[in-house]
Image (cartoon, rainbow, N blue to C red):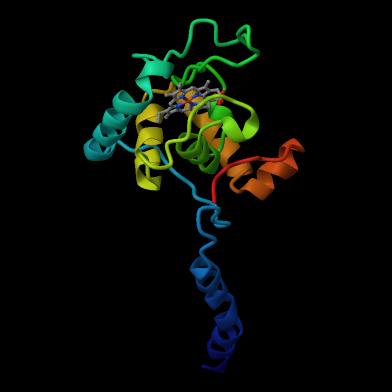
Length: 170
Ligand code: HEC
């Protein structure tokens, strides 16, 4: 009788710790990794698609193909909108970073994508990502998942890449 009791007493504090950590909400920059799986929930996908058609299609294209010459800066030195269909480097951005890009655009990093802070809330941005990812080839999605798991927070990403993530998010 005593042995199991002593074990559970010793494990008690360990079991409480994750609950305490989960309660610490760091706001937009949640330090809790958010692991996501693709969804086939039709409501979420429809929401993502509608938002894309409304706010993104003009630049990123009807089939998410991006600008034709997206690999080269234009005469002003600006990068054209890249594809979001899985053929470019979108998979190289973890979940939190995609959300940041979609809500706050690229201007904090010298890009030209506008901010959608007023129009697109966090759940909207997530719906768009789910919808975009529902079209990615499986191997691209798998590669993204691994990238996302390796860089689940801005701190992890900065450590892994040696780059600083500049953002207008607050
Ligand atoms: C006015 C044109 C424009 C609009 C509208 C626009 N984007 Fe962009 N987007 C860009 C450009 C240009 C870039 C490249 C980075 C930069 O210059 O800011 C980019 C980059 C991105 C990236 C990073 C892709 C990568 O591979 O690095 C994502 C993700 C993205 N946009 C998603 C969206 C979504 C989702 C919407 C709609 C809510 C949207 N964009 C609306 C122009 C636009």
